Amino acid sequence: IATGAALKRMVAPGLVAVLTPVAVGFLLGRETLGGMLLGATVMGAFLALFMSNAGGAWDNAKKYIEAGNLGGKGSDNHKAAIVGDTVGDPFKDTSGPAMNILIKLMSVVSLVIAPILPVIGLFLR
Image (spheres, rainbow, N blue to C red):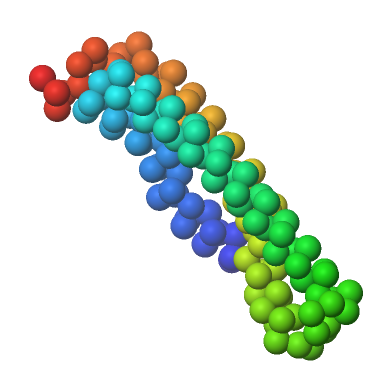
């Protein structure tokens, strides 16, 4: 049941990733699409690095506290570290690596539609 609901909820983000290059390419033209891809690639790479490193840091912070530092298990620091680890594990294991897939998907969609894009976008004529 949870998997079916999760798949249904992922349709909208997937469509955004596919339709954004199409909309930008047809409405604003080839050069704007290139700029959007450049920005998405640079920012996606930085966001992926941030998410992976932040997730690992939160995970290691919990392990550090559980080793007896900063009050050890049961302390307020440990409770906060558990919350951080709950957020950090998905960052480290899924969200960070998924940014690479998003960048590749947008690039492939752009390459597929490139031959039919107008030189000047519809909004810029």
